[in-house]
Length: 429
Image (tube, rainbow, N blue to C red):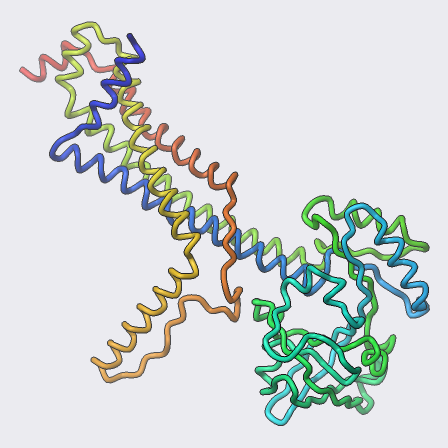
């Protein structure tokens, strides 16, 4: 009889009327509204970080880099590629040479990292190909005079596919001498979806790179892609090092991009911490609602306990009421947050349109020009937020919110069970 009484009485407590009903609804809405931004921040920040890191690893630095010496011949490099390609978990090995240069045209100039890659590099490196979207022209090298520019670089230079640009590079490692000028035809323009990368790189063929890159003004390496770069990357680096002759330097992405990844994660943790505090504060609504129920039902509690109801039964009933309130608020907040997170790009577009309309309206009324308010600046973030739902993290937050609701209900529920029937009757009279 104990459990059915607790359940039936606890659920009946939720049928509040008048002021009590308002408190109950407020508790549910408070928990839901506090959980909504937490879920949105969790999913959006996770998708944003993953999207940026995927582009940094696939486009910029690879998962592992094997440094090459000036003495390494093409035959020796191909032999190293064959050895590494046979290792478990290795997907791709691509030879690359990098240097820096200054591109200029008739309308602008831009300093970029020039990457010399083999013909058909996108056919070999599927991870890179997945993030290089063709914005103009074709991403291939029909001749050594062709260069592929990032969309940010092309915009600065004011050029597109078919136009001519000039690249200035140094002779060897001597910065004091006259620079070398090499003319290129823009064969294609690519976009990665991340502005910082689109303004940083240009690709030339291996034959073109050998014409102006030397040991003094460039570096050579093997870029290696593995199946899971976020799992035991140091162990994979050791396996690559053991497979190669000599004492080769193998650098994992955690060294190349670890600072960026740590910075992103620290920012995300701080945002989640702040949002969690909001949820904890919102649990005060659960506490106050259960407390108001306990005050309103004092006489009813006295009668029930006078008829034989145990104090533990009453406490458990009020605790159940608080848990139900927290559960409903958690479910509403979780569902609403996931809906917003999944449609975050559309929500940003709608909010941006609303802000633009308000700005134009204010300018028309006041007669003053107002600068555009940008809600989401793609120059610093991805052009579109990737949608990735972390099931384990989401369920963990839901369980944590439900647990906080239970803890907030415990004290008033315990107080309800400690009421003395005689004291209640005496005060009522």
